[in-house]
Amino acid sequence: MTIPSPMKLQWFHILLALKEGSLHGYGIQRAVLDRTGGSLRLWPATLYRLLGALEEERYIRGAEGPEEEPPDQRRQYYELTRAGRDRLRNEAAMMADWARAAGIAGGGWEGGAR
Image (cartoon, rainbow, N blue to C red; front, side, top):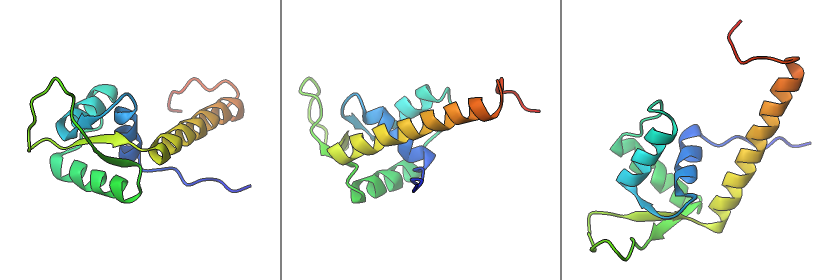
């Protein structure tokens, strides 16, 4: 059995932020910060480097902004591609499998440090 390599945590959270629709960089940054309760902060230089890598992998692509917003050259919107949606789904399933395995292997592990 081949075990797939887990994706980088930052990639996962960016794809998760784009799951519901297109966002610009700051919107992605805020969504990740909110979803992680502030524990994962993507500084602009890091965020745009990660977005570039995700585009190279064809998990995301540039997108049009919402019609209700006036055009703004400074805002680049991004959206998931089919490959990105599939990878996100597979990654989430893999994480769920790991969580189940940890529960079974730990014999009722409560999640606290020992």
